[in-house]
Image (cartoon, rainbow, N blue to C red; front, top):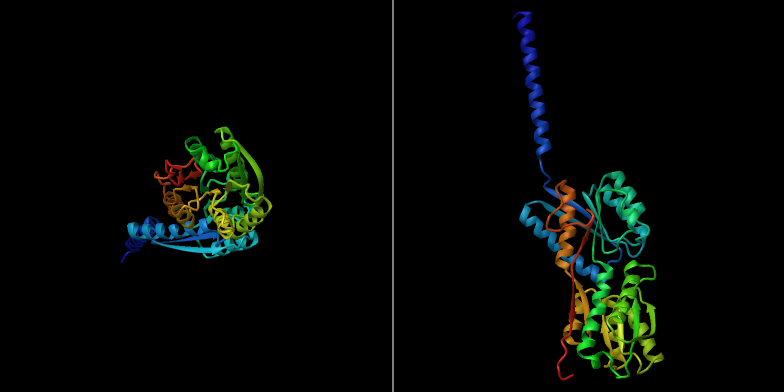
Length: 343
C-alpha cells in the first residue's frame, strides 16, 4: 500500500473517531435525569403545621413520580430548633449530591451560611414557611421562598371576629359590657410572622369597630403545652374576665382550649391560624371559634414543582407564578363556626 493511501486511510479513521466521540457527547447532553434527590431541613419536626405540610410534600413527590417517571427521593431532617444542626444538615445534603435544597430555616436572620454553601456548590435553595431577610434572598438568582403573607393572615384573623361582631355582637362581647376583653398568645419573640400576626390581628379588630381591651399576653413559642400553661395562669389571675383568646397559631389555641376544659370554662372564644388537622377537628367540635387556613395543597405543590424544575434546569412552573421571580404566596381563607340565629 502506498504511503499516500495510508495517510488517507489514517485521516479517514481520525474523522470517523471524531464523529463517534461528538455523537456520544451529544447523547450525553440530551440524557435526562431519571432520579432526583431533594434535601429538606425542618426548623422543628414536632411543629404540627410543618408535619402536616411534610405529609403533603411526600404525596406531591409521589404524584410527580407517577406522572413523569422520574424518581424523587426526599431526605427529610429535623434541625430541632438549632441553626448549627441545620447548617450541618445542609453540608451533608451537598456532600450527598442533592439536586436542590428545601429549607425551613431555624433563624431567618441567619440564613447566610446556608446560602454561602449552596452558592459554592451550585445547589438551588427553596426556603419555606420562615422567610429569610430580603438582603439574603437577593444574593443569588437560585434562591426562592414559598409561604403565606403574614399581614394577610393577621388581617383575615381579625376580620373573622369583625364580621361576627357585626352580625352577633353578643357572641363576641360575652358579658355585654360593650368591651371585648382579650388575651394574646404569641409565637417566638423575634419571629417576623409572630410580630406581624400580633400587630395586625388587633389592628384589624380596631379598624373594624370592635371595642377591644387587652388584658395580657405572652410568648408560647408556637407550642400547645406552653399555650396551655399561660392560659391556666391567666384564668387564675383574671377569673371571669377573658372573653377572647387571639392565638398566633392553632397549636397554642389548642393549648388554651385544654386549659379552659380543665377549668370547666365554656364562655371564651378562641381563634387560631394554620388550619392544622387538629385545629380543624377543634373547629368541627365547636371548641375553636375560627382559624385562618392556607391552601396547603398549593403550598406543598409549589415547593415540589419549584424543586424539580430547579433540579432539572427547566423553566419554572406557570401554575405557581412567582412575585419578583422569587416568592410564591399561597392563598388563605377564613374557616369559622357558623352561629345560629337564636344565639
